[in-house]
Length: 373
Ligand SMILES: *Cc1c(COP(=O)(O)O)cnc(C)c1O
Image 1 (tube, helix red, strand yellow):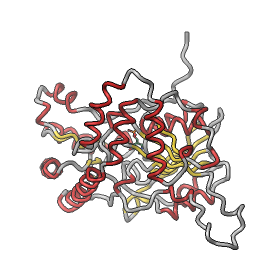
Image 2: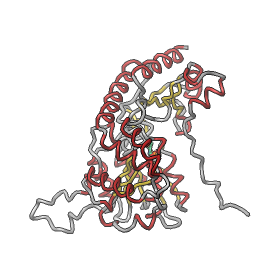
Image 3: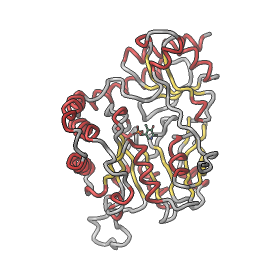
Image 4: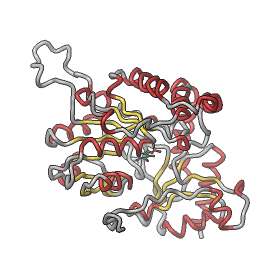
């Protein structure tokens, strides 16, 4: 038999693991630091690690109760109803659910370029077409503006805003997100991907669900009903250090209350993932350690890397190094893995995830050595 036509589908290319690279170069994995996938260098929350071990004896059961518990904990965290939280197998899984819930065959979506590959992949899986808006380099770095989005906008069904943006580190302010939502059609979903939301001071777009004018007696109720054209994506993969467990979620409008049950893959998140997520949510100390170390790391790269860098709201810094492929390759031979952004369409840039202090210092020193050659 023939598969469906997959020629428009692109492969997701994840950063390569240390083991893989060490084997290729015939070296010891402990020689390498991996700052290429925006993972948490401090590991998972220790509380989550305990919860994962304890979950081992529960895994013969389907994750019904614990899935509900995690949903409730997340709803409390965001001050929304349980029905507004769509738990999924990673943020990527939540992207799929949102595509399933919104796209009819032939609908189009609008994605940032450069940007996160999975948006387009997910839309195509669901028989959608993909158009792009530019995140272009201006005099002050990469510019993400409502105007750039709206110039490219042509009635697409979903508009993806990555804020903070991977790989540039730029962000949309809340007002800018709202401007895009206000100026696109009522039938267009503005999907705000906050995978890096813990690393920025910018408030989450979840607040757009609030009836902002609730207290305004004069406001007519129809104008100020809770927004139903914005959804927010969050993940446990970055700040919480749980990338390997695959846990993420979307926060969606109130009016979508019964849709999740219709689009979710049954038991989207495992018992292990749900228990880990519940424990990680309680572990403020781990998130604080992580975000403080990210702030330090970004500063260190900005100040000490001998290449232009861009302000970042994520746990990484984009740097303009010239020939990204050869710089990445040379750094790899010195034991430092960074992300060559050629596949994002940025052949002169590398993305450096902030590591522990030691790792970040080593990465900057190695890259400076390479850049000096
Ligand atoms: C990491 C990331 C995600 C989510 O990744 P998951 O591991 O699937 O949760 C989503 N969007 C962007 C831009 C990311 O970088």
